[in-house]
Amino acid sequence: LHRANRETLLHLPMEPLSYPKEKPGDGALFTDMNHEELVFQLEKNLASVPHVSGVNNHMGSKFMSDDEKVMLVFKQLKKRDLFFIDSRTTGDSKAAVASEKVHLKVASRKIFLDNERNYSKIYQILMDAAEAPAGHAPLIIIGHPYPETIRAIRDANKAFREKGVSIVPVSKLLQSPAS
Image (cartoon, rainbow, N blue to C red; front, side, top):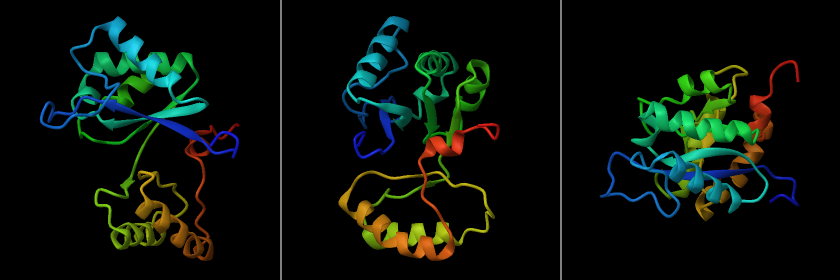
């Protein structure tokens, strides 16, 4: 991805409210981890994905509602000059409050593409997004690199161009107007 000049984000697994029924996966951050454990695991995860420009949460409904833990993660991301995209897995996310305190660039997803791995549904979500009466406001859309998602984005791209909709790296949306 780096050689292709594509932006790479770390999809960081975090503790969901439904844990242990639903497991976030290897390398997950948990609310019962102490400071050193969290920093160690976060750094290990970041090292596993070269050339990341930002991070977004995988699951994390419990973790993202913990002020102290979110603040700790955001401080580490700030040290690395990364940004964070809140996947909005909880209405009680502390991302906005923590980002203000740490001065970390943060944005939130507006649309999730592939809760269902169904090409037709994913394509329809993309078409609906292209028709959204948001004016020129950017929409952050999150999806996975599933074959159905990739195909739907590829197929929607022609319609996007016809409507004047651009797909841009998320970091471009986070640049300050003075940049």
